[in-house]
Image (tube, rainbow, N blue to C red; front, side, top):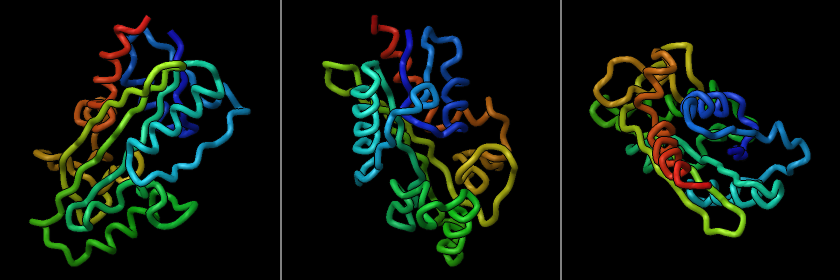
Length: 196
């Protein structure tokens, strides 16, 4: 079964392919549909953005499509960066600039109050049907400096709960076992088993 992943994010697509390995699903990406227009992520919730992207790509391709919107929520920053995680340091921000801004804003926050969580919402749009959503959360905390060279985004400063290494210090399989995206994809994959 073929399904379109509504993203041009290569690292995210690789992570999803890896997690869904072994499931009877062939994941296409927007690289397979170069004429598909970009969808602006202008909603103020993760599910709002994911649903918008999935519906737009399903309409354009005429195929089942799924999208994810995910980000980091820091308790001491009232849930920021949230849906703005990818562009926290401004439009065109890099992972490094986003992490630098986050650490700067958290400089005065004591270790006991650095709780954070990664949130992922996956939306599945099936032409002619209502959209289905699947959620995953990874609880943890924010360190004081980047550590590790693996992963992407805020991985170098995120310590998953119960661990003394950041996501960026873990192997891909270690991170996958704990990640918010894996938890959401597991629910998504279970649902896909019942789709003909």
